[in-house]
Length: 507
Ligand code: HEM
Image (cartoon, rainbow, N blue to C red; front, side, top):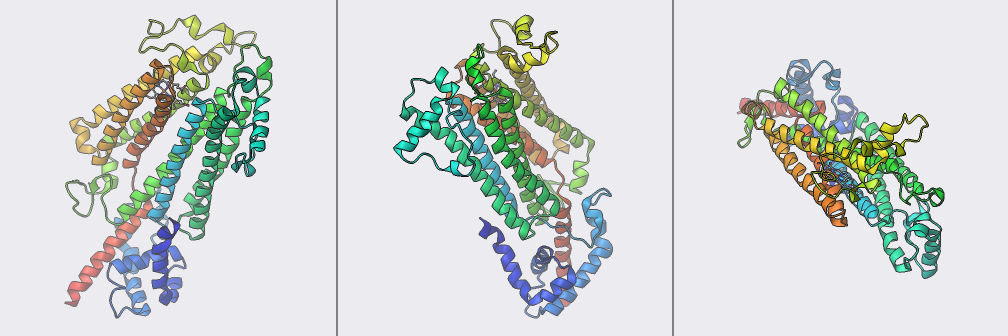
C-alpha cells in the first residue's frame, strides 16, 4: 500500500528534479512543491514542451502573486479563527488519499479485534493465557511439552479450579486459540499503524497537528494492550477462590474501559480516514456531501458555498442532535459492556417486560446488599454498576432511548424544511443509521431471548460498532472541508481558469 501511496509523490519528485532551484525558491517544502507542480501540471503548465524550469517558475510566480494578492484570500472560505487564515503565503499540507486509506484500514482492523475480543469473552477463553509477554507471546506453544507447560499454568487459575477442572488439553488449546488470536491481532494493529505513520511523517505527507494526533493514537494502541492485560489480571486473582459468591471473570469496570478505549480508537481512525479521503476528493473539484459548488455533478444539489450551506441554523441544529446521539450510542455500548461483564444477559430473558412488569421492583434495582459503606451511601452507584438486574435495566433504558432518538432524527431529516437544508449525503447517512439501529435492537432482543448464544451476541457487539460508524458518518457529512482542502480546491480552480484564459488569449 505504501508503494501505491507514494508512487505519485515519487512521480512528482521526478518531475521536480529539474526544478530544484524553483522549488527551494518558492517554498522550501517538498510536499507543497510537489502539490503545486501537480496543480501546474493539471493546468497545462508542465505539459507544454517549452516549459523550462525558468518559464514554469515565472508563470507560477505570476499565478501565485495573483492568488495571494486578492483572489485566493477572498474566495477561499476562510474564517478568522481558521488555521488557514494564517496567511495566504503559507500553504497547508493536504494529506494524500493513501493516508486516509491507511487510517480506514486501521479502523477495519480495530473493528475486527473488537469482534474477536467479543468471541474470546463469549467462549470464555479470555483467561487462558496467564502471562503478558508483549514480544515473545507472539509465538504459541509449539511442542507437546510446551502445551503441557502452558496448561499447567492455566490449572493454577481460579477459573480452572472453580469452573473448568474437567477440561482436556484439546479443550484448552481451543480456548487458548481465541485469546492468542486477539492478542496477536492487537500487535498487528500496532505495527500496521506505527510503521506507516513513521513513513508518512518522515515524508511530510501529514500536517504537524495530525502527526501529533496519530502519535497519540499509536500510544493509545500500546495503552490498550496494557489495559487488556490489566483486565485479564482481574480474573486471575487468587482472592476469587476465597471470596464467597465470587465468579472467576474479569472486572466489568476494566472490560468497559477496554471496550470504550477500542471504540474511541476506532472512531478516531475512521473519522480521520474518512475526512482525509473526502477532503482530497473535494480539493480535486468533487462535490461535498452531495453539495456542488463551482460546477455541475449529476443530480446533486447546487449551493453557493459549502460553508454557507452548513452554517444554516437548521443544519447546525441537526448536527448538534447528531453529536448528542453519537454520545448516546457510545454510552449505550458502554452500558452493554457492563451487561456482558456481569453476564447480566442471562437474567430476565424476556422483552419488553422484566419479570412480567415494565421494571423490576425498586428494592431489587437498588438492593442494599450491593452497598459496601456502613452508611449505605454507595447504594446508588454500586447497584448501577454492579447489580446485574439494574445493569440490564439501564442497558434497556439506554437502548430504547437510543432507538427512539434515532427514529426521531430520521423523521426530522425527512421533513420538507430539513430536506431542503440538509446535504443529500446527510439524509442518506441518517437513513442508514436508522436501518442500523433497527438491526442492532433486534440483535440485542434476540440475544436476550435466546440466552446469549455466541453468534447472536458477537453480532450484537459488531452491530454496536456498525451503529457508531453510521452515527459518525452523519457527522462527517456535516463537517466542513478542511482549510487545506478549500485552499487547494481554489488554487486548482484558479490555475485551471488561468490556463483557459491564457489558452484563449494565445489563439
Ligand atoms: C440499540 C442500541 C444498542 C447498543 C448500541 C448495544 C450495545 C451493546 C454492547 C456494546 C454490548 C456488549 C457486548 C460485549 O461486550 O460482548 C451489549 C451487550 C448486550 N446487549 Fe446491547 N445494545 C443495544 C441494544 C440492546 C437491546 C435493545 C437489548 C435487549 C434488551 C440488548 C441486550 C444486550 C444483552 C443481553 C447484552 C449482553 C450480551 C453478552 O453477554 O454478550 N441490547 N450491547
